[in-house]
Length: 106
Image (tube, rainbow, N blue to C red; front, side, top):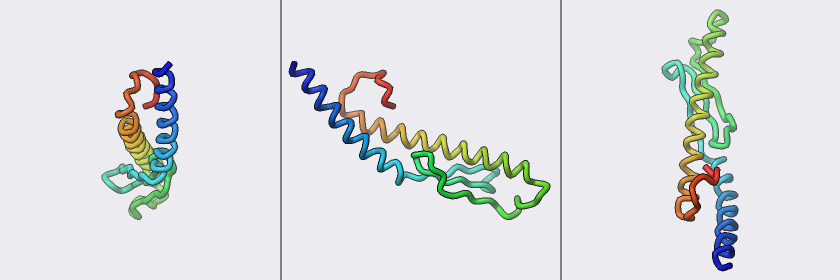
């Protein structure tokens, strides 16, 4: 029974820390870049896009498709970085709790 109470206490601690982490993720920002820096997308680790920067040389009508592709690439780069930042936060959060692997928390 003591093990069960200990697990419940750990679960409550984890829930509290998860809420804190969610708030922190809103403050973590990453930048995805494509086209050698000609296009950049800045987003939070919660996947909220904050800004898009486009080199003025890409603002030509005939380059529209290239620009669209570069935006997709920059967004995906930022998303991957945001996911990595989130995983690192989760590992830091759950690392000291002694949870069994495979709980799907990361």
